[in-house]
Structures are given as structure tokens and as C-alpha cells.
Image 1: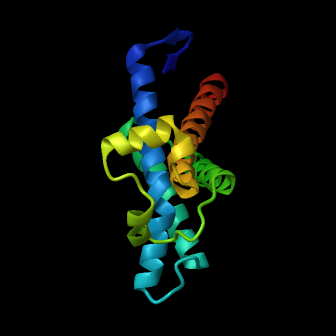
Image 2: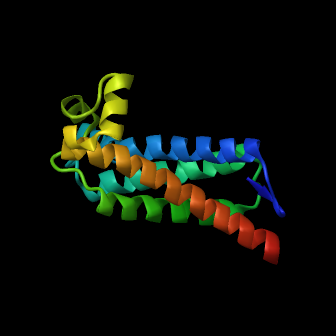
Length: 159
């Protein structure tokens, strides 16, 4: 987004898309971890499920770094760690109740784009889990994008 003192529309769009991607992955990582744990005979809320969710977030962070051209392993690992910690923190701010597998999403998730928009714009008509997934996903995307931007800014000035 920023190159020295310049801001570009394409940089803003790329940051926005990266944040949206992270929000989407962050919204389902915990449920995917629970589903995998359950399939392997573990509890859907077990430490294994949480570990898998964290690794999913970290892998997504590393993937987006490499796609955007980052090659420094320190930066990639730092961003991955901050992404996992940020997602965990946001998960504490926007908790879901009784929801730990992907199969359970059929009972709370908006099923159409219009329903998604209504839940996003008018949360008073959405359930608490829907709100947590939608706004938690937005917050995760923003936290991850912000942390990556701050690291890039710091790295440019000290590198």
C-alpha cells in the first residue's frame, strides 16, 4: 500500500483483498480444526484442534507473504506468528458458543449473499454466533493486515 510516502489504489486494493482473505480463513480455521480433530477421534475443542487452527492461520500468512514476493524467512515467520496470536486474540473478543465443527455452521451461518449482507449491516437480526463469525472475521483480517503493514514499515526503516 505504501511505497515510501506514496499510497496507491492498487496497494490499497491488495491490502483489502489480503485482509478479506485472512478474515475468511480465520472465520473457518477453528471449525476446520475441530472437524479434523473429531475425524481423528479427538474432541472438537481439544488442544489438537486449536493447534491445527493456529497452523492454518500461520500457513495462510506464510502463503500470502510468498505470493506478494516476500523471501525473508524472518519476516515470513514473524508475520505467521503475529497472525496466529492476533487471530487467537480476536477469537477471544468474538467468541462462538457451542460451535466447533464445520458441520455445525449450517445452523448459524448466512446461506445466501443477501443474508450475509443483512447480518453484516443489521446485526440486531443476527444470532450471536453469526455476529462473532462475521465481525470476528473482519477483525482478524484487519489485525493481520495491520501487523504485516507495521512490520513492513519497520523493516523498510531499519533494514
